[in-house]
Amino acid sequence: MRSPRTRFSNLFLASALSLAAAAAFAADPIKIGVAGPFTGGSSSMGVSMRDGVRLAADEINKAGGVLGRPLLLVERDDEAKNERGVQIAQELINKERVAATVGYINTGVALASQRFYQDAKIPVMNNVATGSLITHQFDSQPENYIFRNAAHDSIQAPMIVEEAITRRGFKKVAILADSTNYGQLGREDLEKALALKGIKPVAVEKFNIKDVDMTAQLLKAKEAGAEAVLTYGIGPELAQIANGMTKLGWKVPLVGSWTLSMANYIDNAGPGGEGARMPQTFIQEPTTPKRQSFIINYLKTFNPKNARIDSPVSAAQGYDSVYLLAAAIKQAGSTEGPKVKAALEDLKAPVEGVVTTYSKPFSKGDHEAITANIPVFGEVKGQRVVYAYPDDFKKASEVRVKDPNAKGALTATKK
Image (cartoon, rainbow, N blue to C red):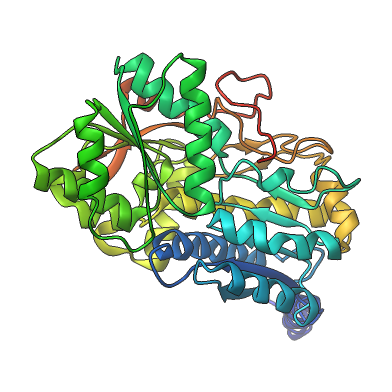
């Protein structure tokens, strides 16, 4: 039997440890901005990204935070509007005093907003927006504060073309792209990748956000003899393409950017959306222990409909972006922007993520964490995204890591 003195000592020790933990978290939190569209047509991407970010921040805080300080997320809905993104950037920098910001779903919003972070010397981790220009917007400046852990369009466009032209043998393809920066920059990348194969699209058509009738564009593609349609847009309008094809009784394959995996494409297109293929950095399958843990925790925490993450890619990349920033802040021993940027450019320890294990993901001249060897093709099947090719699924337990020499990416240039 323990003596009263022993019991008192144990109680004192437990109290001291509790007080120490409380004192550690009494320190000022590290504010991280989270900017994305949490309402509107892009919201399935934005909410999934935000929830992945929340999951990572919660895990980090439960493990003691960063530098003994908790992460505090400062979330703002940019509504996929450039002007709203600009307002939010200024608020997060000047009022909230964030140490860094993660997010950006829409290429146009990123390009309009991130110049304020560049001027303020505060890092931005683009975790979803894929426009090729994003990390090159400030190439003319001596320092660059813009990073990304998503597969940019100079990776995706050649993959789309390789799938349609080389793997599936189509000779006549049409391009349908939305009128945003995302759609039009992506269209340029597709045309460039097709030209490298000696192919010119038989039709190149544009549509606007919230368009509900794609008949005119589809008829032009059909009359031109298109054997496949290559797309650059987001879920709601992509669904209208699939629905329009169904109404016309014209069914050719849809091969497009990663956004064909969005829930509001899959659900709104219904049976007509089946078979669409797109590059993916993450498919909701427990192919590694890290991915299994992430999927279980995400589903348990957020309880999405049909146990399906609305945008698995957005969720996984959002999650990983927080761990990358946390590793840089820890290595820098500081939340000062220049020090965090320098740490990101020379991360000493690997960061295990859902998409990949990030070993030296960035350097001073390379702010892209994802290379062309990492994404695989997904396919809409049974109202969810699965691996398009059995071989990719068989090898999915082998984590694909960054390879700057990986073939298949266009050179990301200013546009």
